[in-house]
Length: 126
Image (cartoon, rainbow, N blue to C red; front, side):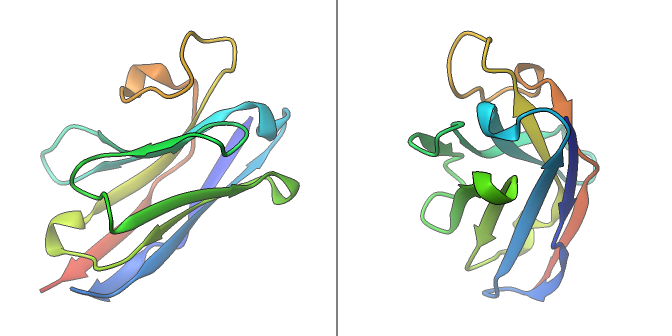
């Protein structure tokens, strides 16, 4: 499966952005999809993930209550709505998919995902 992330940009603190992750190739709807981010000099970290059906999702503590992950399998797209953005949210954001054959629906580790898209830059100014 090929993933294409977009929607990043420059926004002021308190603003909002919506990232999209569009998939092509194998049946996208069978994959758990996650968002990760990587700031300067920081390891890539988990942000949010959603199960293949959309019935399960989870978030990093740092974004709970501000970010919402959703998916539209008819459009082969997963979204990350980011509200109340903070300067510390500045990072390159990546989407990734996890094979359904893996044990467990959601993984919080970069090693738990099999396919990655290129990143999209999010910059939040203070």
